[in-house]
Length: 418
View (tube, rainbow, N blue to C red):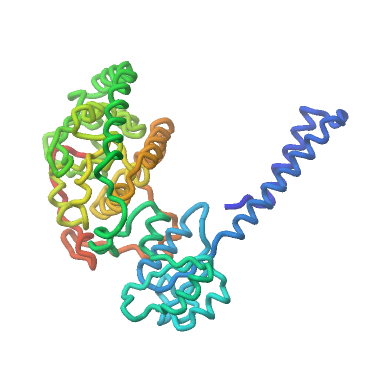
């Protein structure tokens, strides 16, 4: 968002008062500095306003659920990269529909609408494109410089995740990406081994101090070993510092069901992700990489295979100590949130590269240093409620319109954390 004029004026006046204290106006040689600072503040405000006013205008073709999702994604951002000019669809959406207020007209008037709103990009979000696309109009505007893009591809690039609800297997088969062979994965593996070996040496004193603190804080073992599903679904024992009180009864894997079991020290360890440091040993043993999808408990693996679309693709790479879904979403507390994290994981697997790994590593370091965004699930802005109505509460096991989003009985285990 652009700074408001009142904020800029307030800042400028404060700057002048401060300058009078530090540099009395009797010292006329400092006056140019004060004036330059004031002029710079005003210039920054005008430039920010112009940049916001010139954000590319976006025209969405179709009123499908993907259209509503795109609008939510754009307008929930603190710094929107696009301005939604409106929706073009054959039929006016129902009044209660989230896209109804943005309807500009039917598809056969596309040329007239484009001439009126001047979009820089047209995003095609029509579910059934067999004979409903205005191909001639789209082609005419495409050759005249207006970008025409598929909604799924645009959503992936904009949000950093893949909309698996609209994804067809042929789209994954024919798409670019999924570079799980060659030099890239080999370099990632070498970097993971080097960082894990060096990291264990450097943080050895910290590991010893944390181990002593865990032992003194509560009863139970220092380390917690949990069976997780690795590459190709092979189980392995993940090692981490214990952050919960041991319990004799079986509990669910969701964090929300185990809040009362988290120790005093465990809350801090989880917030700064320090409980994950022992997993560098898993990296050296070849069970994990430094970057990759987080390994799920084996007790949940079979459930997720049945309930989450394309979940088997997740097992095609080594799991990681940290990952794209971890820094973008955080912990998951139910099946729907696990599905949301799957959207990020699928994006990572498709677009994995050394650059993306470095970005994930940098964001992870930020979480460790500041402890923000790691201990809670990130949620969209309040604008989402106006665009995409929240799904009604469902009974356990009740089916939804999307089979892989159906609720299911909670998995029971003694792990207490997913």
